[in-house]
Amino acid sequence: MQDVKEFRPTIVAFCCNWCSYAGADLAGSSRLVYPADVKIIRVPCSCRVNPLFILRAFQRGADGVIMAGCHPGDCHYTSGNYFARRRMTLLFSMLDYLGIERERTRVEWISAAEGAKFAKTMNEFVATVTALGENKRLEDLRCKK
Amino acid sequence: MQEMMKNRAYALLENGTVDRVLGWTRGEFAYDMTPAVFRNADEVKNGFVYNDFCAANLSKYLVKECRAGGKILVFLKPCDTYSFNQLLAEHRIKRDMIYVVGIECFGKADVEKIKEMGIEGITGITAKDGIYTVSTIYGDKAIKPADVMAERCLACKSKKHVVYDELIGNEGEVVEDCNRFDMVAKLEAMTPDERYEFWRGELSRCIRCNACRNICPACTCEQCIFDNPNSGVSQKAAVNSFEENMFHIIRAFHVAGRCTDCGECSRVCPQNIPLHLLNRKFIKDVNTFYGDYQAGEDPTAKPPLGKYEKNDIEPGEAGGAKE
Image 1 (cartoon, rainbow over the protein chains, first blue to last red):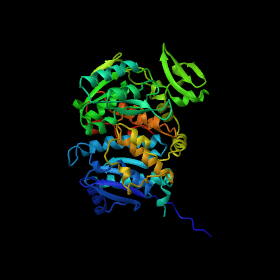
Image 2: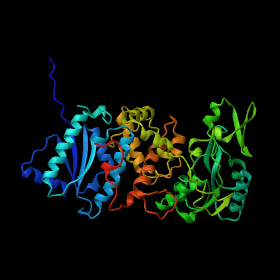
Image 3: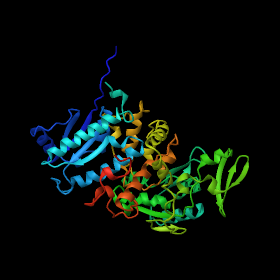
């Protein structure tokens, strides 16, 4: 008999070094629980996230991609997240336009003091993506394991 | 029109204002008008052609011509002047090396549409009193321009020359009530599944010939990211849907906020993919979220992705299905 495995999504989280990554750290050291499906990639600033990164994450098997950075106005580099916000707004709108599920992408502003928000966001996002199921519309068959 | 342009070219070559002319010449077929450089009056006399098949945007050719030195005369239609301004803003061309003659445009004919009407053996086109006369080897045919006009010209955004040294004809005006976002709005109104099916149908035809990239006046990178073998997208017909999506999303994103909506990408696509609908989506979004912006209108304007407002819309709030 075939083993029916429960679907666990792969989530890529781009976290800025100064706020969200520290927020994740706080979530960890505070023993807050969030799913191990979230794979964090640390970036110097949310502005470092190139639209290609998002697509590449989907290509390499992500089912959902979330970008987290400092709250607008709190960027370590003054304005990085403002630019990132415009870029992601347009990119996500374009993905939606191409018929790729809107819920697979998300942007959240999480400060270094918001460990609880980090855990909550990730729990929510994993639940949403799990409900959506596997990423089929932006998958690259060559990268399938 | 053609004679007036030729005469200006002779005069400017004669008095030494320019040392060459960038215009159009006949390609393999009579409806195949291809950009060409003419170095003297004789070449202009024998080769220069201008008619309603001359759809090519000459702005991008100036990037290469500017490197060759000298001074170039170029004929620009209104929509080409926007691309010209955008290239100026990006320092891709040098203004003092170029002499721009703006030419009036009433829309260009799409030869595919003429062929669809069953007209064969086309040898030329002339416009007079709002009627096209298409000459063929079987005789002349009169058709209404509106029936055979290119899609992008039917939704023309502006007949205004935003930059020129001299004009042949009127300066023209911005078309206020253009309906260029109609198709985008129609797609937006569909369900995500319908949109996905629509784009799969369109993009799966892509053969990755790179014609859209090569013709695009906004795509002037010396080395394109897709030339990198590690880009995740190979330089051949895509093996799966991801590559097609990736290439077109990233290409559209690279020109977001810089695309002047000249429509060359869709015109040159051998597979007739409506690529301009991707660019127009970005233009529409920029207009909706960050205020009206027309790339190329003002070469000193800041591009929408190069600036920000503190109260910009959040990515989660911008369109699409909400949770």
